[in-house]
Length: 336
Image 1 (cartoon, rainbow, N blue to C red):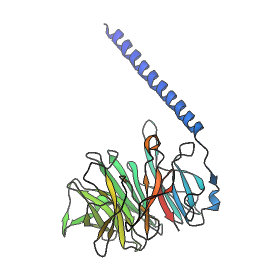
Image 2: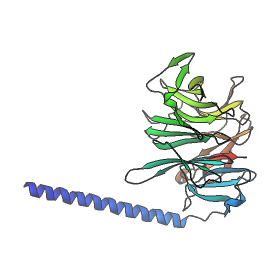
Image 3: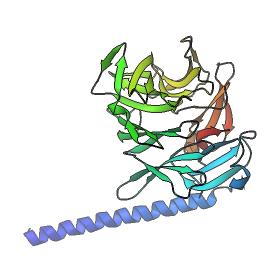
Image 4: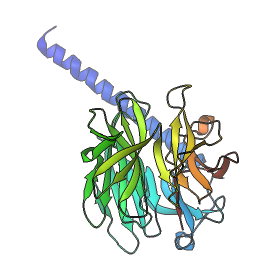
């Protein structure tokens, strides 16, 4: 075959491949449109009726045109009608004055954004984001924001995954936790495989808690923004969440049965006592405290409805079984 013939053949193959890809995308879009059209309509209410009262803010996961939009329900009626905002996020967290939104935009190259929306301000603040959104947190006063992203791999079960966690003081600058001094058992260490994820803030403006992972072990660590240190406290704890009274930390704890299997636990910071919470499903989420007695978290739906995640609640002292709190929801934040 001549060179000209080989080139012509390659061009023809390329055109067929492109045509096949375009055809697949058209069919996929048509299938998606039909699924959206067939989805039941949600019972909703106006945002203005909820945004000034105690509420739970979350990501709406009901299949349909509103999938991914930020929604809210009254704290006093979690199972009631929801209000849908115009904001779409992969991960969301909110306080009474600010909303942190981590989002991804699909395209030839997927792009990622992290933005903080403040009540009364027209323009959002852009935060550094270097990978796929994973965890988002604001301090209770809204002055600090934390983001965790995957920069390699796409889950905590991936081999060789890497995370990037950044804390931003909204009145100042940003701090990458990779630059903090890590203290383990009284000694400063700098393992090459260190990873940090899942920040939760204390009320003093300086202290926070985070997962510190190195040497194939995960630790609950206490951080200080002013001293730029991270000190390990307790083994086998991931994605911590500090209780409103500041005395306990809830987290997911890896089980030995299989990879990617986690159970919720609560650590009393004063006594060091750990309480395993009931539940027979693996929880891969950073929990939120509903109040000082209960924690809330997301779980995938069952079977073919896995994408329609739900928010559950369980007693923080382990005294009762988990209960469904909000259907078709994810990434809850309790706003009082």
